[in-house]
Length: 211
Image 1 (cartoon, rainbow, N blue to C red):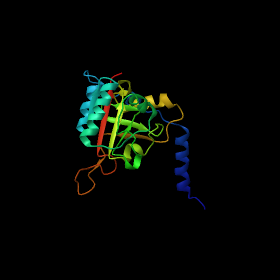
Image 2 (image 1 turned 90 degrees about the vertical axis):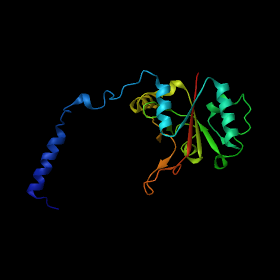
Image 3 (image 1 turned 120 degrees about the vertical axis):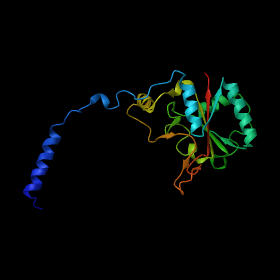
Image 4 (image 1 turned 60 degrees about the horizontal axis):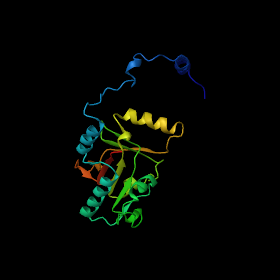
């Protein structure tokens, strides 16, 4: 197909422009520094406040024993029969304590699921999950209740900090899926009415365990 002289002239200008890249006019505004500054109250309190605003439920536990007692009390209150978990590290933490409701069936019959996480984003109350974790992609969104076990060293202030840590952790082999969960699943697509639990868990708990 013959190209008109006018079109050829435009393409020539485009090729010349691509061969001579232009420097960014404002390099310091390209995300090198965060617009948001950490609060003096600490990342734990900031995450708890933001997570609660999103209808998430935050429980601080002073050690493993308190974690187990809180899980037991919650399961009795909710009358859970099967809380499913397949994360080895979490099961190791819970193993010394008898929990009658733990893994009494499979994922498809579970009342709730327990997983770990990659990081917690304090500024937005967000949980960072990835496909590299033993819980996989399905478990955190399949069951009606999602329980996350996390530790203070996993708290970061902003999203860019979490992404930076993921890159440091995995290098060039990032997980095939990285997801960000900010409280329970919700949508307002139906007649602009907020519905919770429509595309995933209707309740999300974060148990932050003091190490």
